Length: 116
Image (cartoon, rainbow, N blue to C red):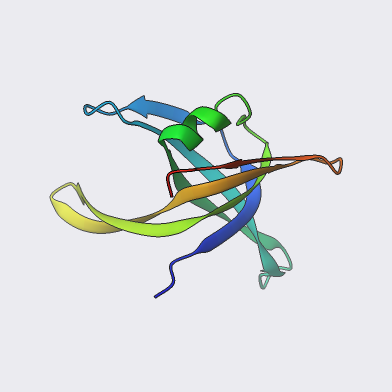
């Protein structure tokens, strides 16, 4: 089986970092990814993807992740159940394993989670 995702897009807001009860650190980022084709109106649609960044990788990206930053993200899809107004929903997010910062210049900075 293969569960691998690669996204290239811009962050829609600054990352949100939380320390869980067991002491683990997790950050949430939202990546805007433009679709490669036009809709019936002749415009490109954009998907907004929730991504979780855990532990060491979360610490590494904190100084660099601001709204508008263009990144390339490699990770895996993870699903979970969530109750909203007594109705159960299956939610999907991407768990980041590697993040590269893409700039307008040719310089890129890479970070990788050494625990995966």
